[in-house]
Amino acid sequence: MSDPHQPRWDHNAETQLTSRQRLDRTARHLLPSVFTALVIIFFSAPVTIPGAAELLPAIVINTIFFWSVWRPSGMPSLAVFLLGLFMDLVGFTPLGVSAFILLLVHGIGNYARFGLMRLNFLLVWCLFGLVGAAAAALQWALACLFRLHLLDPAPAFFEALLCIGVYPLLSATFSWFLHILDEKDTP
Image (cartoon, rainbow, N blue to C red):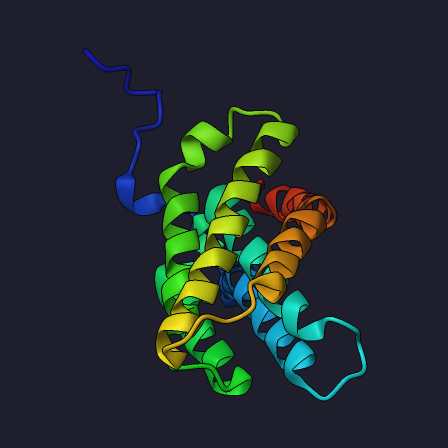
């Protein structure tokens, strides 16, 4: 028999979030996608950064992979698809190429996330290196297919190395930021 003095649990009495809390939670979930869109805009603008054309896909692939592994709610598939289309539009590449590659990277990160979370940083970096190199090779192969002749693979090789090389810096920055976001999630 239940104790009459003990309060009963009421499933309708869950804490209600205020509109400010809902807005804060939504903003935190949209932040990785908004960051990626701003990176696309910045590196597509006529800036005089050497290698900006190769740096853009490297940063975008790094961002999508990281957030797909560590917080998939911050990088949903629809956002990845729209970011890929946006990247194609501002980069004057065939429509859908970047979206396809980014969705593959997102899918690999999402699929392998529970295994990757248990590994140390160096192993995750090596596995990401394979993903980044495969993404650069696929982008090169699709460019060759669309142009119907073999292109020089040096830019794709440089893009792969750049993608692998910037991962530690971006991963550390995103990990720090994820730690801040997780602190805000706890009451």
